[in-house]
Amino acid sequence: MKRREFRSDTMTLPTPKMREAMAGAEVGDDMCGEDPTVNRLEATAASRVGTEAAMFVPSGTFGNQCAIGLHARAGEEVVLSESAHVIEHEVGAMAALWGVLARCITPANGSYLTHEEIERRVRLGDDIHEPRTGLIVVENALSDGNVIPIDEMRAIKSVAERFGVPVHLDGARLFNAALTLGVDAAQIVRNADSVMFCLSKGLGAPVGSLLCGTADFIKKARKRRKMMGGSMRQSGIVAAAGIVALEEGIPRLALDHENARLLADLLAGVDGISIDADRVRVNMVFCRVTKPKKSDSGLVDHLAREGFDTYPAADWGGRFVTSSRVDADDVRALAESINDYLRK
Image (cartoon, rainbow, N blue to C red; front, top):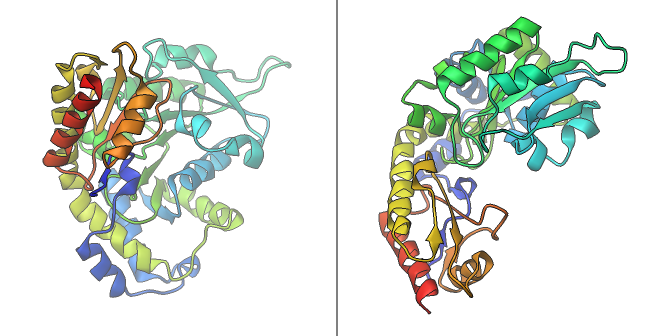
């Protein structure tokens, strides 16, 4: 039986061109700054997002935590959404590694924090009892499939500058957000002091992320990367795939968005499915089963038997992610299988 992959865009596979580039990559010792392929990837990445410099890291979590450890000191707090990736999916790393406190906020709009919500929580440490706010973390695109408008990003940066607090952008799916907002990625990034984005999600590379910022910030980040055990040697072999990802992966994200929209449209008219099609902004589709005697977990089990790989149902219901692993025919087959489950 053919398996159709709808769990995550992290399940993308390297393209033939990536494999060819990896096989022929020129390499050196990256920790010494002597891997020409890594150097080219970093220069290309920095140019793409409009920063002075970039550093290749093993994963998005690594990049986020490296940035947090540089921006915030032990005992300071990080202001962010309670559903942020660094809270939900990074194993409490900022507390374990850096001794910083998470000041979590529930967004009033159910998705992303606004500058007003952030402004009310920033603390300068003037009160002897309070920690000082050392960092603000925002995410764009968000893990719920939404995006933060550019105007809101600007307003958050303005608040941060007024208080003298840096902003780190978890841009794991930065280019998805840029596509949805109709802007260049650099327009989003200029509203942060550092940004991490992933090569290994929708862009299709097998491994790696980039941490980007000023030249001085990245110089410090290289030493922090060494401390964290992330300095690799002849890593040009995997960096070569990242270069191809930036060249070819970014343009094809539009197809992932189209397929997500197609799935949302197909499910919008299905009796027994609750879906807010207007909330489908990137390559993620969230829905709930509402038919009596049917359930989100039952749907997941049904789909698994029919050859569709999805993550277990969660608080939000079911999630389906489009990527280069699926095409429009796979999307239609998924919608039909969901219909079958509800009809049985």
